Length: 314
Ligand code: UDP
Ligand code: MG
Image (cartoon, rainbow, N blue to C red; front, side, top):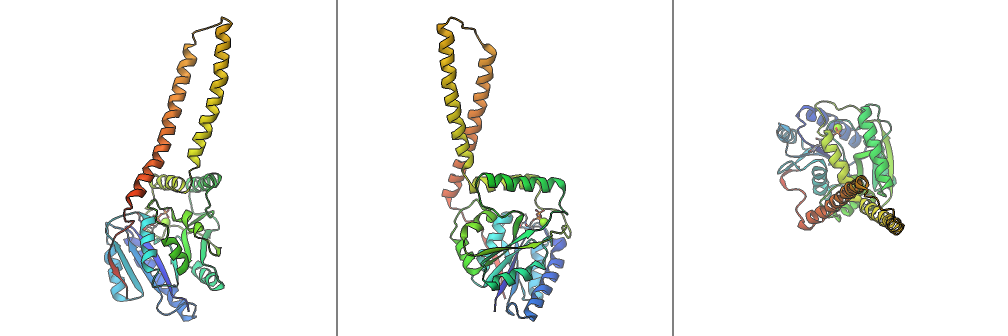
């Protein structure tokens, strides 16, 4: 029978954690009851350096019932790193692992469908939002634009899929082979391969508390996704540079023509305009190239992606 682990990254989630734990426990017990998963299945919370009582609550839950496990990170490393810490820590104990957020936005009833798909033989089951009715127009618009943009740039991501997914042990072992530090898991997981499928669910409102992903973090995350999945922006610069060089040759011909036909006019405004334009272009190009060099720099350091200070497990 499948030994299932559910991994939940938590950052300052004291308001929702108990309720999330209660509902997940019910779900696990029900699945054990119908013999879909084995009796030693578990729920593991990853505390991502919370400043509130999150870790204390996790310890209490673990003390009261060994169905709950906990991983305490040494400091806040962000959602993706916390999730990876959880997945990499439990993969040796479980046959399949489901990751989900702590705020009950992901419908936990999709877990049943995910397990069914896993039993059918799929290694990766993506949870996909069927609609975004509860998101604000702004969030919906930015998210959809992001998916479009990243597809145009040539990266392979599953539309409207966040980090609610099931992965088999062998898929997780595949993920472990990816050593990059700039983590964008929803872009990496499709690269693992193995049979995969999709289950749909409706995304609810956050149960309590507020989003730990303000606009600034969201934009940084989108940028991270693009720059860690594709080098298309660099190619864009190359193409642009090539085109402009060709154009400048034509301009040169034109200037020669004007010179020899005696019609030289001091074009102060056009000179200045092109100076500014090219200056801007060069700066932008250098900036983007620098962004990638920055990534190379970070990757070569091979810093640990997380450090675990405690692991409560049975
Ligand atoms: N989270 C985390 N570390 C962080 C920020 C968020 O582990 O630095 C967790 C958070 O506790 C939640 C999940 O990541 O379980 C998603 O965050 P949130 O629900 O705030 O994002 P949103 O749903 O608003 O995009
Ligand atoms: Mg949320």
